[in-house]
Length: 310
Image (cartoon, rainbow, N blue to C red):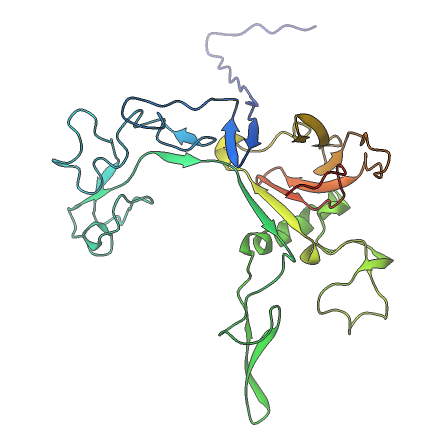
């Protein structure tokens, strides 16, 4: 091992990379973050003034009366227990606070005069969210007419003047489609449309232009997708590959677990069903994770046990 003698003018730059643990436990629609139990205070039902399972940025307004000092803080709230809040003066820089404490016009940036105070709101909070999407590419009818997923045409004397596309019902999925195809080089399971196999699903609207009986491994547009969104505050710059584990418990027993064992974004079932009547899906890919963006897409649709869940 070689050694280096440092001189008086040498500068050492040391970078430490950490991976904090984030664990979410969900029971009866209530989220618990890192096994933190519910804490109630003297003035607030939630000490941090955020719901269970949420993280409070800066952890301001601890055990404050919820709703005190909303709007113009001067002279309002309970003395000695007022909410703290961010504020700035409106000036020519056109800087505004993203979270406003008021919905009144007098506190909106567009109508306040230069030199007026603009008030923000604390606490700022975040937690994981879940969206269950059926036929994820479905769009709502435009102008209240037509079928879902259709194009809507305006014509005159047989000539098409304009073609309107309806608004997606699940815009978050549509926003992720390009990212999913981009990571397809990392794993084929990211791709919106799988490889041609001769059996499976047919992409919506492609049945005419493709050969007869053309089918694919999967078409995410037509799958039921369980989208889990993870705010960046929980993982920093990137979710560490290989660190993800999703477990499903039923009556206290572990019946399913997914892990990204290959560290390529594939969420693979790692446990075997104890019920011999069910197919062994261990090793099957049940979804993918976007490490940089903080999204998990679950598409697996097999049974984990024989019980009927209401």
